[in-house]
Length: 301
Image (cartoon, rainbow, N blue to C red; front, side, top):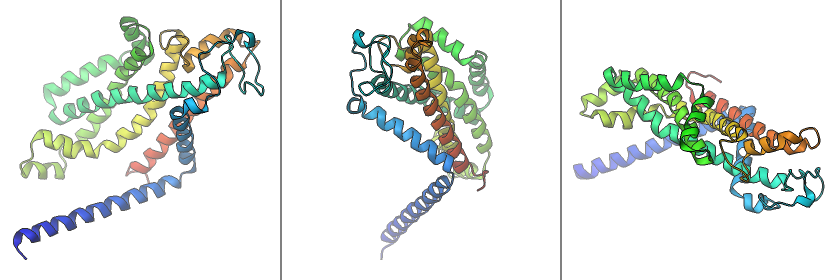
């Protein structure tokens, strides 16, 4: 066998060994996750919401924005399982479509924070010096304001609608990801495997994306899961204040706002919507805690 064929065979065996190791690690992580019943409960809750969001047109019994003033403020019954709101719209249908909007809010807001915050944090921690000083002082400025207040300012400038609310929530979430990414990068920057990569001729950009980024993914995933719920609550709060999603969009915060004046005569208008927010955020927090326990090597079973 020629030397070239031997090298190819060795590389193939190495790739197969790596696949086996990764597979074993994933199985161990899944087994460890399944042992945490509370975390599994959180996963089930989140999956239910995802399924409801995806199949909203099939699951919703009525058009979520169609008004029926003859049946306004109907209590729960066979025709309308969760009753109707002040415009006669089916609350169950609006909650189902609201799940789609809330999942969109979480994904896009956390996605903005991922795309902007993590690279900024890594570059600040890896290069240090003036780069670190400039980036982190900018993050400190954003952190100096309460998140909801900063979001209100952004939406006031850009205009009140759902897309601007999502963008504003993503922007105020950026500093949290940047600071965590910086801290993790500082812990890894002088590690032996980073020094070995430099000795083998790897450039800074390659080290950042091929070594550091891969090793900080786990805590970023955990933080993203927890920030998902925070983004939903914040956007719902903005919808409640009237600067997020605008009527008749079936967004949970806007639904709470429109139904608050009927709390005494028709409490179901806000009760079920509030419970929808509660259970989704609870499921995300339980899932995030479980992922933290599984992905953090310092946590022991």
